[in-house]
Image (cartoon, rainbow, N blue to C red; front, side, top):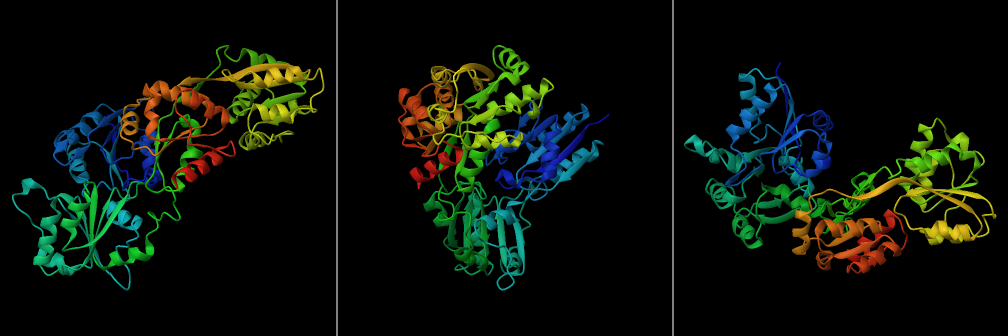
Length: 505
């Protein structure tokens, strides 16, 4: 039986503009065939075991010919696989999806079209340019700036197009801009008509050049703008003065800045979202990953079997809370078995995660590190009280050692292990060497040490501003020769974001 092919529009660049149906298709894919305009984070929806085939096309640089891409979809589907063809923008708006679909039809391969948000309307919108406006433009046209060279000639009706439509949007037209503008002027479009060239639209590196039809080619050359970009012609361009929202540095103080995030991928979402909300371009290189402890949970499971004997449980991280309760539930117990226990949590985030399990921390120190916890528990612990500390296997011993000095009986139970991530650091190394990363964030000492291992030389960080979540992490940075430019005042993700904003603003 033949498989199934989904021709999915990936949207214009901002990975959050992928449709819900597009994400659903990616989740069930056996094979994903994708082009260069698909943001890498879109591929996070793809199952790890799925085959990924890059077929990206840039001007004069094709990873695979279109005819071969068409046949590839047929061949993979006939293997009985679910195939997703992921295309930038919309498959049927100059995406050559029609050609791919026709060959699938000819070969009896079932397929579906999943429309995407086309750059023809979304990119101008992100630049503050509506393609229509009742008082300015009541029509718009989307035109290819790069016609099929095998047609033997152009069938563009310049005499109709130049003055017959209010707003013109040319896709893939930057390389032919001189010819396009000449044709428009020759056919009656005034040279003074407002125009805009928008590069990398909807992404944090978006650039918008406002010009005129007559000056566009020369202005683009002077500015050094290169594809991918679109060309917008019409009086609607004037509205950008009032409607520019995406490149607004007052509302998005980190717009145009690139920030490296090194947290584990499973924990990076809050940091990434916060930075992106402030306009930053985020580059992710997870430096750590989590695994079960070396003792395969033997220590924590033994502690849980005697859980009623503990007077206190101290949590030092969100991850520690989740892993502990995973083991508690696996043992057939729940929060009722902790009825007589007191809880302490380092940090607001850890305390908030504890609340998800129906428990309120009795102690949350003002200083979100082990030393703060030690001070907060002074006078709270009675000699002989039993304390359980579910934590990372590699954590510092300062907390348990000091609590024992108070007379407490402390059991340390590893609930997870932090390991170096297995990531390709080539792109980040090149960006660091070129000074293209404005700030690098570190939320733990492990991320610092492991990133140094991934890039091979912590000295590469000299071209970027290092931002640490707290003094312990900052000390590790200094030990490796990467002195922090800023340390978060509050040792939280929000505090880290604020430190990045302050140092880059």
